[in-house]
Length: 156
Image: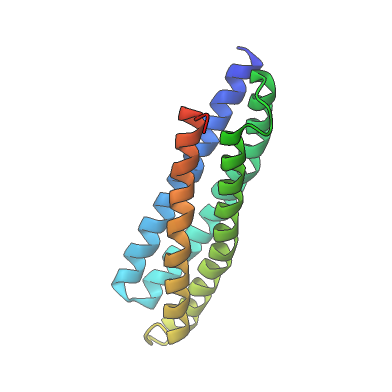
C-alpha cells in the first residue's frame, strides 16, 4: 500500500467522521430538545459532548495533517485557489464548532440542574439552543462545500 493511498483513505475517513458525527450530533440534540424533557436533554447531552471530544476533535486534528500530506504528494501548491477556499471554510467551521462544543456542555449542565427537580428547561437553555442551532448551519454548509472542493478541485 502506497503512502498516498493510505493518506487518502485516512483523509476521506476523517472527513466522513466530521460530517457523520456532526450530522448525528445535530439529529440527536434536536430530537432530545423536541422532547422538552430536561432528563432526556441531559442524558443525550452527555453522549453528544463525549462524541464531540472523541470523534470530532480527533478528526479535526487528522484532517489538516492528512490533507497537507496529500497536497505535498500530489504536487499541489499550498496557495491553489481551491485549497485557499478550503482553508477559509475550515477556519469558518472551527469558529462555529468551538463555541458549539461549549454550548452543548452548558445546555447539558443546565438540563442536569433542573432534571432532578422535574422542572422545565430554563430560558438560558433555550437561548443557548438558538445559538447552537444557528451556528450549526454555516458549519454544516462549510463541510459540504469542502467536500465539493476536494472532489471538483475547481480552477476558479
